Amino acid sequence: MKMKSATILFLTAFAAFFLALPLQGGTPGTEVKPLAEAILKHGMEDGAIRMMSTDQTVWVNPYFTNLALYALLRASESAPELKEDVFPAIEKWFEWYAAHQLPDGTITDYSGYLERYESTGKFDSTDSYAATYLVVADQYVKLSGKTLSNAAADSVHKAYAAMVSTMDEDGLTWAHANYKAKYLMDNLEVNQGLNAAVDLFKRLGDSDSAADAERRLALNSKGLDKFFLKDKNYLAWALTENDVVHESFEKFYPDFLANAFACSMFDGLNPRYWEKLSTQRQVFAENFCARAYPGALRFGDRETADAIRNAMDKHVTATADPSTIRLDILTLLLGIALNDPDFWPETPELPAESLLR
Image 1 (cartoon, one colour):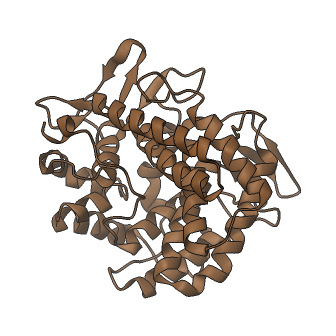
Image 2 (cartoon, helix red, strand yellow; image 1 turned 60 degrees about the vertical axis):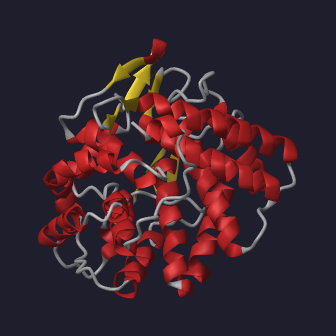
Image 3 (spheres, rainbow, N blue to C red; image 1 turned 60 degrees about the horizontal axis):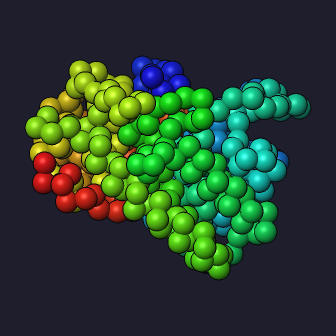
């Protein structure tokens, strides 16, 4: 099972305990800005963004940082006044990321204390860390109208190399070289990362890399078809060597969460996949599944969307300082506050055989 599962299970099991900002389903202006500002307070002077901001300890997880920064970029679209703080924070993150990448483009988690922190020597994956970084870089360039610094441009090329380093012949990526599992969630993020890379490389004038990314994007999009389970109306959550399928539809993680990823990201997905998934709306509400929220909006399932949001409202308590909330949970809150069925970046349409199943 994916190593990120420990973090996800901790997050979902104790989300209500950590949540501390009441959201009442109002307009973005009343919710987006304070949540975005809370995320920004997790930033450190050197450009790193730590998971908690309440004490001297440091835990930097590049994957969750990338998701938080992506959410900030989306927030700056609805609250443009945030741009003057969001863009510099992202530029500092690019510099930090570039300085901490390993020669092969991968990057590890970091931990310690404010006065000194260091690499843990570990990462959850090589594909998702890199893919989400590419998405942030692409969104930043599009929204800011700026060009990447030389260091940031170099980090993009290295991240791309890391992302595709475990790509198999079918276009799907292994989590990392020593962990032979092709995860649906990771490969959806890789698909978005490849799409972002095409745009980034074109902007950087690197036509060869752009062509390579386009080729790999087509392969990955076709490879994603392997996750679809004929006649079951849901997707497998992983494939292992020799295309052994790992699937079930019994529990929140990874079964329902992986399918929520798909329903919130795929364009043109057959509605019956959401119909199957929507039977678990109570589970999503209990686990505060922000990943299912855009899918519910996309498929017009207001009942599920409201269940997720109402469950959050029921368990949160007011706080004078939302920056005390953990970074990954703040990102979930901000994603729901934005109330956008297209919150996640573009994912190319699936091959017709998947859509017709």
